[in-house]
Length: 443
Ligand code: UDX
Image 1 (cartoon, rainbow, N blue to C red):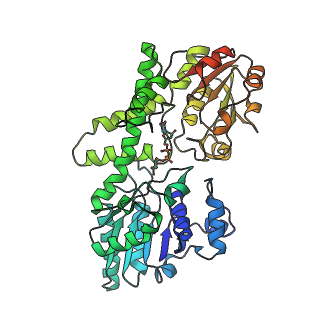
Image 2: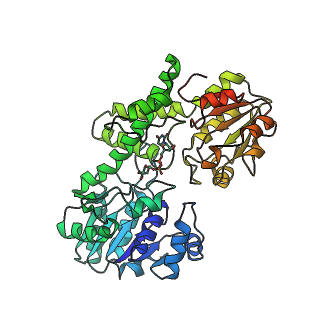
Image 3: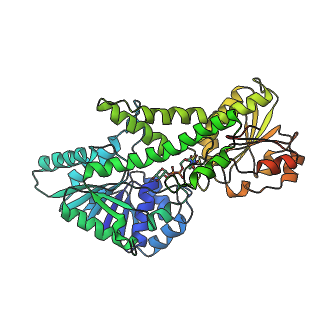
């Protein structure tokens, strides 16, 4: 099929590239001319394993193109995906201005029947708004062109996005028109070798809701475990053992029950808030969802509070080595990363920070921590340690999992480790002479 993907952010770029990889002809559109030029040169704006090679391969094969001109590309396309951002508005709801702007552009330029797909995460009812906006423009032009608006939310995870897209657990297609749904099924069926029943078709509103509910459910599992971790610590239990104990129940499962420094990233914080807001707009107070958010806000500072309990309220003259800045491994994304909150709290109390992250240092230095002067960015994890009072692990990158503990001990001024992701074995750390603090187990 001939596809147009509007928006070359995370979702748009990965989706467009993967559709091209599957044999479609794809044009990715963005209003940012510099970004488009860079993409044409093979320069990818985000770090995502496997993406760069796939973009370059499909660009060379001419199955993937980049352009700033939506109007030209609409003329020859079968399906147009809206994959622009839906940032959090001031009141916590999803800001739809970019989605509706694209809808307007589509209405202004479309010349033949088209399927328009909402790929961005959008609140229930957005497909109707997109439809109205397009129709309004067509009316102004005096044209009667049929079109369908389909909801097709994206469930990919950063760091594993290509894999998630190429081998999805499921694809959700929300459509109120069987013809459009069939066309979407045809587009996605090559991604499922056997279980085509994982291609789930439903009405538009249920599909829009599904995305928020999936993210809110996962965020709930995480906040629940973080709350349990805090209780475990108080009663002298070990959350790592409790996690294995409950995960072995197939009704509960092992995934997304890892306690840590709270969830971050571009999706969970924003989508949990937006779902709460949607409920509110319909006169319902979503108490559980609100608590999920509250628990997460507190959890981000649990490690900072442990540092304060150990070193005192005033951290003047102390230096901490931070391992990991990104909100999770295999990404350079710093959005809502616990590291931002923890570093700000420690610096506010007079501490100096030596930080290292394999991929997210530029993002941190130039955007998310740009106003924080007391952070030194180091070239390696060991470089952060020199004379530091303790090491604080905040992102579970593979290269932090099994470090040279002797070197760690020698370089730190005292062998103290705060582990915000429970990466090390408590007993072994103690045997090696470390004072070891983790989440959900009293040290
Ligand atoms: C998430 C969803 O997984 C994905 O389906 C959706 O499309 C977008 O949002 P992503 O934000 O990329 O993806 O990351 P994910 O791997 O889900 O992790 C989100 C956050 O939860 C991270 O901060 C991670 O550290 C945290 N997390 C995850 C935990 O604290 N514990 C866990 O057990 C799992």
